[in-house]
Amino acid sequence: MTDSRPTGPLPAISELALDRLTEWFTARGEPAYRARQVAAGVAAGRAAGFDDLTDVPRALRAALASAFRFSSIGETQVLTTDGALTEKALHQLADGQRIESVLMRYPARRAAPPRTTICISSQAGCAVGCPFCATGQGGFGRHLTTAEIVDQVLWWKRARAYALDPSRHLNIVFMGMGEPLHNVDRVFDAVWALNDPARAGIGARHITISTSGVVPAMDRMTDELPQVNLAISLHAAHDDLRDELVPINRKWPVAAVIGAGRRFAERTHRRVSLEYVMIAGVNDAPVEAERLAAVAHGWPCHVNLIPLNPTPAAPWQGTARGDIDRFAAILRRSGVATTVRDTRGRSIEAACGQLHAQIARRRRPAPDADLALAPA
Ligand code: SAH
Ligand code: SF4
Image (cartoon, rainbow, N blue to C red; front, side, top):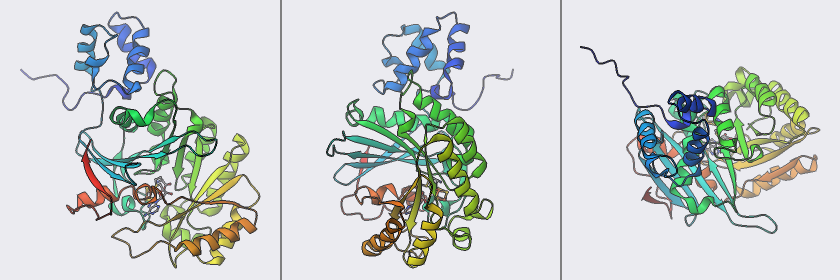
């Protein structure tokens, strides 16, 4: 007799939108409110498994455990830096793929409350292939599922509940591994789930999608997620250079990407962020600042300058701080709002994909002064 049971791992509970979860309960003769109760219990980050959802009857907890995985995130290692203010997790997925997420804590500043930012991945690897990026250097693995995206956030909530108390503002940025707008359906579903007050309840204005410039999906974002922040990874303001640094530019050149950014800003009345990784001797000359000013001027955007975090596979170095300040001054003189990303957390934030690359090559992590490997 053949075994007709499905093979492979059970679906993760975060994969189900609330209406699907409601159907699952009602099909079992359970009241619909159970879906909301279980989804909220999973997303709250206090339970480590279905059995900890003690307001759900025991038999139902057992039924849930035999139908779903509590989390799609498997074994996880954590690296700490910046005196434990920044932590980076390397998560293993059910099929052995590895992805990264980063948690950064920012203390209260003047009137601003303390903040926590979680940087999450949308794909294992990335097909865009930016030569300065560790993820791009490793090539494409696969798209993440909705659950794998959402569960990175829930993993941190469970593991570091103290950092995610309600008095801290929580921000989510899609700046980990992968091009989120190449995995647009699952990323948008994950945004809805993270935003849902019945689940993680993270305000859309606290969620940022960063893209290398997938123009049709940027337009979809304008229509479907107008409250979510848009960051464009520009890195060069003219096509000859951007074709090399962000190869997707050969498909959607600078003018098309800026056009999509402007449409987003016009429709949503919100400012777009233009990310610009500064690579010594490559894109940091004063003339490049003038070109950048020309595309950034006259519409609601601001430029964020990020010193390159060097990767082993590329010969490039980050621009020196003095040269970054001179580049920023040219932009500001042209009326373009410009920030230089603070260095705290920079080494690990900009390094998404690097930890994974090191482990893939079976090498020890780079000897960062205060980098310590800790179990999750
Ligand atoms: N694929 C998306 C989101 C993930 S990358 C995108 O490219 O926008 C998130 C950000 O990290 C991008 O702005 C990217 O250019 C930047 N980044 C990648 N490698 C980096 C490095 N070595 N140093 C500094 N920033 C880097
Ligand atoms: Fe992909 Fe973004 Fe890295 Fe480019 S910078 S390879 S788009 S993850």
